[in-house]
Image (tube, rainbow, N blue to C red; front, side):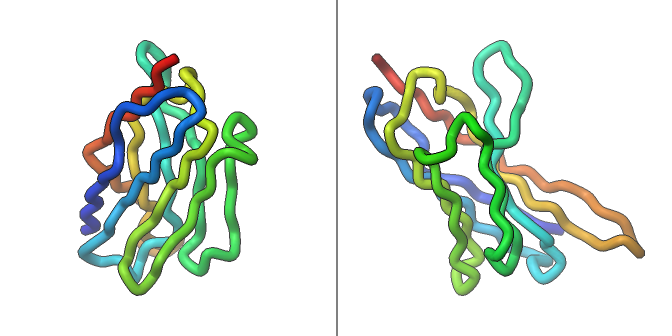
Length: 121
């Protein structure tokens, strides 16, 4: 079992910045990678960025490249999403995700409770 607790959402003007944090607890040794998804109003959830446990493999969606940076602090079991140059279209509920398990016992995804990010014009 893995528990994820997010923080850092809020209301910001376009062009501003926010930093989201996601602290993991529980069976964290079996986490393969962690990431951030978002779900804009009336739309499907989409992957924003993902980072492996070692931090050596990072993926970012084209829509956020150059503006958002994902990082992790293994000592704190925390993943961050630094969001700069925010746009109104970044408005969404942001969810932390952890992929857990292995090929022998199977994989599963854990989710945080979600944090609202609202970007005003």
